[in-house]
Length: 303
Ligand code: ZN
Image 1 (cartoon, rainbow, N blue to C red):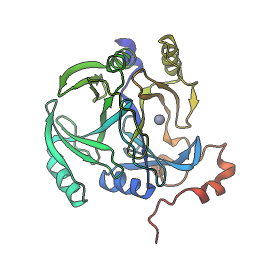
Image 2: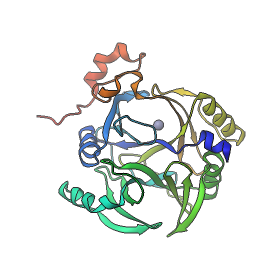
Image 3: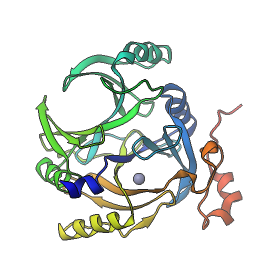
Image 4: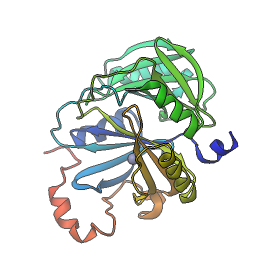
């Protein structure tokens, strides 16, 4: 237990595939009211943006990140994907959000009750299901806070065992075929479909690419990696993602997990009060900046 609390602090970020970058910015910035805290590129494919949204400081635990592949076909969820992403707002602000989303032309379903809370369901422009949770006990906030995800696993028992062992998740009941696994100390939880999903994921826009869990430092990351190897899994080496160091692993149920360090954070390459205001490239890509900027899709509407 103590060990888990030292290294598992909930979700660090969740990364999605999208299509139109302008629409990504409009929806998650204007409609969802998140702050764009980093404009960079996919380090493995620098012709594509990597857009990070979160709270104003871009703190780990608040981050949604997007790869907007221009003209990507819409994906379909299956075993090994997240079926929905959960965002929490103060319970008293649910009515205001329903009105706001209606004004923005977003069709919503509910609110309905799930695990004792009101949940409003809608989709982002790319087909990703979003659950807005009205939560008691969270202070007034202008922006929704990452609260977890609903996961479809090809092997739910194995996925749950891994989450319990590595993250310290605690089972907290079952409702309508979903097992709730609370991540202690984070205010976040993962709802795991009890039945295994064999239908494969069709990757594309609207699909969650991976979920990243917080690790306090590189020593903790090394320990997690060693444990993944000891469990017979096949994690990547420790990768430098500039804003964090990370290890990825495909868990037994087919979901891509990442473990990401809190440091160094987003102020490593631009001042904290100017996060997300200009395109940031890692040093190895900086010499190609002009060519990269030419090839990137514009972030502002044409005309
Ligand atoms: Zn990631």
